Amino acid sequence: MEITGPEQIAERLQGLRLPRHVAVVMDGNGRWAKSRGEPRHAGHRAGVRSVRELVDAAGRLELEALTLFAFSSENWRRPGAEVRVLMELFRTTLDQELQRLHENDVRLHFIGDRRRFDRSLQRRLTHAEEVTSANRGLQLVIATSYGGRWEIVEAARRLAEEAARGERDPATIDEASLHGALSTTHLPDPDLFIRTGGERRVSNFLLWQLAYTELHFTETLWPDFRAEHLAQAIEDFAGRERRYGGVQPEPLESVRDA
Image (cartoon, rainbow, N blue to C red; front, side, top):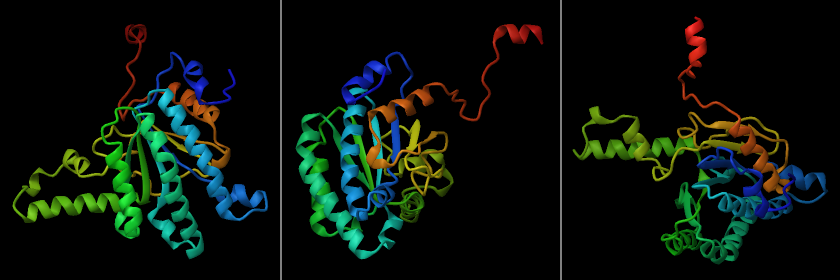
């Protein structure tokens, strides 16, 4: 069944094992624009439609969480003009989409170093989280000014500060306590990671959380990504065995024949 919009995706994937949490690196905006002889910011603007369709599809599938890598801590090194365009696009998109997301019961979270944003944008992020805080549908996480190494360092620093204040015995610091200090502690780790644009790396995204995530790479550039491509990724995911470092039990017949 060919999907032409988010409304068909639940029917297409009926009966399959679905991920609870999908994480996406939205790559290829610049190449998409270059292939059309347009400036890079045209690709970023075109990618907003893909975000909207992916969020709609995730909601129809009743996924628990969707995390999108919107702007990395390394992206601050891009030319100033491009960064300014990205910040303005982020601002206007949030203003335009917030009410629609709220009406669709989406709960917004933003992860990353907000201190690098201007105060106006910081207030917008806080306002969006407050407006949607009581929603019980899809949890939409936007990683912006974010880096996986930064997040782990921040978590370690918080634990060290607790120990220095005498609130924590350093000997008690373990995986669970570090996980609890991460910005995604309220979410299950991603089951499925999708990267568009043909590159095959995670690029400092959710480094701790992706330890046992299934990875799916597609050549599709982000502005061309649609519900059909999400369905293909989930079908790929549903066909995999997830062993988390263990061994899949052998069928009883095989054990008897050994």
